[in-house]
Length: 567
Ligand code: HAS
View 1 (cartoon, helix red, strand yellow):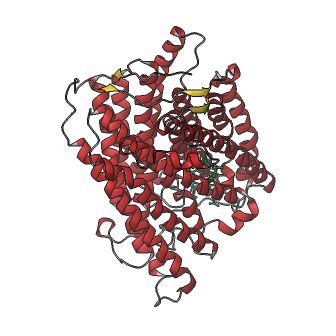
View 2 (cartoon, rainbow, N blue to C red):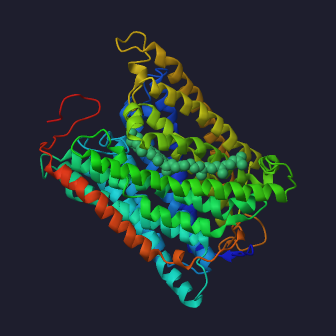
View 3 (cartoon, protein in one colour):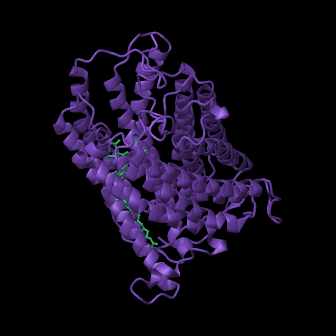
């Protein structure tokens, strides 16, 4: 696939919508990141009260998780698709549908955030019962999800039109990646929609008294694991499409990229029970089956590791490297004009460790050691708060510059931010992971208990690891402040002279591929979707039967701050 670096003129409506989809979640992200800093300070017992959440640790944790992991990521995935799909196909989106979807997402997110702040939805980002939220929290999340569905349906007509006009041509890889992301998202969210609409909402509205906790958890994890690939895949789109070009080279294999995306459709979903290895009711044989599929879903990431490393090696050699590993030193780590490279490369390096941790988690015996300990947040900060967040931040800054027709401001600050953030992330995750291996629990206000010498729960050997997580968390926060400074000074700066500010000429650093192999069997999504559905039915039917046959009664609501039922 050869690509010239063309520009495509977006409509005025797309400019304003995409800028809104980038700016509002960035404000929410910053509030969420502030919540993250407060988490680490609370956990270490450095502060006793954060006025923003009224001193409620679990409210702060819910706010941090929902805003950063659910709201910000969904907005960015939609904004990237709204930009990359029309750009790659050279067609305009239907602006009415785009705006309807954007408004639904905004209203839903603000509603959910507001209810959390009122203290009516202290249910953490997994919102599993018996923790109960106000009905408006569930309504807000539903609006966010349905709005994101609508955005992706809007890409379909221009894609079909493009296919009719370009018979025999390969669909651009970035478009394949964006559709893959939303195919997985659509299938996965059907389960959480069922959970919310048939179980949590009626329970929260008082229409039923009790809820089947095991069934709700199972439906949640049907959604919850593919959710992590909904986060990861927009980053993969950027690794495959942009990184080789930014590095000064080409994508090593176009076919590998297509294979990777199709493998994610197959294996992202029939794996959710690996989050429930320690749950009762589900038979060990089905946990084993989900465990095997979990190893299968690591394969596309391993293929990505080799393909992207080969692409970077090619780039390094193009930049003058001759020795075996010399290419690693010839990449544009500190090139101010290629600041975006630093966001993608740091994420990849972090993901080596995040990925290894994932494979450890998915081994049943190892999982018995790490489940529900601080190791798990250690793992997910090395994935969602590492490669995903950094790629999304770099992508947001790039997109805002393009759509608002602005030169990026504080470029050097933007360039070094990922390195500072990465140092903080490694320190924080090391503290969480080793603390977790020593038994430190997750989702616990350690500052009020284990780190407090006056408490009977005091655990002296956890304290150094709690402190490390604080040091790392503060450095990460400094990195985010640097990013926010660059992002908002760019937003409020003057537009570049010359072109029409209302109809921006947008361009992307799309990579050519070194090996442009033909694989017709990778051209069509349908067979992969059909096989995925078969795998889901085979892997989930026995799990759901087991859960339904379990004789546990339903549960009344609990609050994380109170050990007694709410009624
Ligand atoms: Fe995970 C728990 C297993 C990936 C997120 N995970 C979580 C939770 C989150 C999360 C949020 O099996 C906590 C949920 C909760 O709140 O309870 N995870 C895996 C496995 C993978 C994996 C097998 N996770 C992710 C990703 C996430 C994410 C991605 C977010 C985006 N995870 C688990 C399990 C649990 C779990 C269990 C349950 C734990 C429990 O008990 O509660 C795999 O997909 C990972 C495969 C990745 C690789 C790495 C490939 C490396 C690459 C980098 C190459 C580098 C280059 C750079 C080229 C094999 C691609 C070269 C450098 C130069 C300088 C040149």
